[in-house]
Length: 170
Image 1: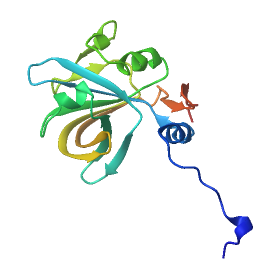
Image 2: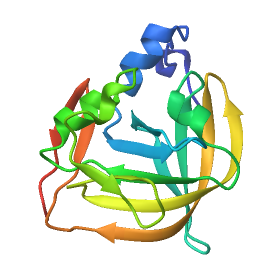
Image 3: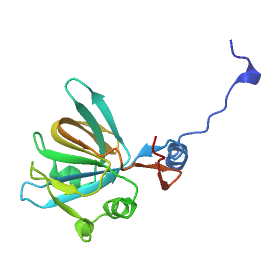
Image 4: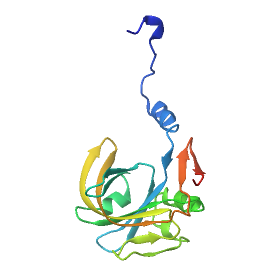
């Protein structure tokens, strides 16, 4: 049983306090790409990607409600998740901005599924949108994974305390 001297004191949850606390949670850096129904490529850098199910293979991606990439997605649409490898930090920073010039200067091509595929990622997941769930100012996109490309020789980067840091290979 906790005593008064053992009680922890929590601050109110301001946006700034939440951001500062979450900055201490290291997260993989990922770039999500897709094409709109008109064939225009879209992409966004995110730190909220996680596995959901092994059977069937599924993952979750959280995208800001104001994201053009989210606007390009719809039920059954294809998208690609790129786990950013060391050396792609500048690309990740470019995709973290708003605007149509994200793909300028980026080494990319179209995947077999017709989605933008960025060269040099540590892991690539080719997915189809299964469902959406609104969560505050973000939307959770549930994706069914159809193909995986894994390059174990490319260490991923993590985002921690507002910096991208390379991981150390095992």
